[in-house]
Length: 448
Ligand code: SUG
Image (cartoon, rainbow, N blue to C red; front, side):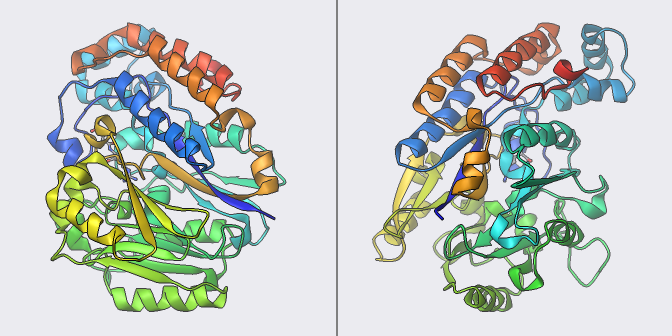
């Protein structure tokens, strides 16, 4: 049976703004308070989806969330009508209103961890929504994420969904941003690679000194258990705490894998040689030939990697077995990174082509091409069981572009977030979106 890697991209929501909410994420911190352009952000994301579809890749779309999250503000004690809740939060606790307005669900690499059916004990595709509990504005995403994923992957014969892990720091889980899967073919058993930043219960693992390590070993282990993965099909590795302290808040800012290939920075991990040997050995047991491409710090520093998001690229397999790298334009703007990419593609290795995308609106909040997509490996019958409304087609691209043009503002600053009209605009837009994507009722305003 044929199998595919389907990239589901997060559609940027109507409240996209620069709230400076993510300590440890350099771009989020340095663009705090700038005004944003939600319309441009959504169109940039859609252009990437369309381009990948046009190149022949399977592409899907994941809906944004209802913001401001009035229910979250009510849980924090603000009361009255929806407009009064927003007004009171704006007056008494602006940072909480800003957090409740974040469109951060667009970075769907953090929505969930996904294990394909070839790896799991019951032969179903397993999803665990990420609790994202390191940052308040992201911790409020998972209930709606679960409903949206449930509506996209509703067929219980093929798909199994797990609720987010307990919402405490010991089980901090950032989803697929710290998870990669190696395999020969997407439909064959593979090796799932979980990268953690610290251990909650074992102090032998060093933790970063400055910035938070969002993913714990214990969270990764719990996800592997929930998904019914075999020990032989799992490798755990620790992110180098020093790179977390330099702004590598997720592993997908310093490494990316696809098929049998890991593309990573020399400083990305601790005990790299041991980890590479384990990946090689375990992949060999399922017939795979593990290969790694290490980018030396002499060619690209960690600082250049963080600024350019070289590793937050999408590494995609082409029909002839070679690979293509989708990078943000910040890579082209960085002389050293661009020179490295030129040498990489001309070296005769597996990575033959680089395609550049303008994702500046998302990049300014620390979200590159890989942050914007959730990979789901599916065989033909599983793909046929996905809600067809969320699979990208030329007509769907047309409808979504028209929908963005109709509903989105082209400028949003902090003071605009206090405007109750924004909530109405968002709800009107999302109500129409659930019809376009045939999702049914998934948002709190549609359910309550
Ligand atoms: O969690 N930024 C996101 C970026 C997530 C990137 N995802 C991956 N690397 N997979 C975060 O830090 C910033 C929001 C703000 O400051 O307004 C933000 O949430």
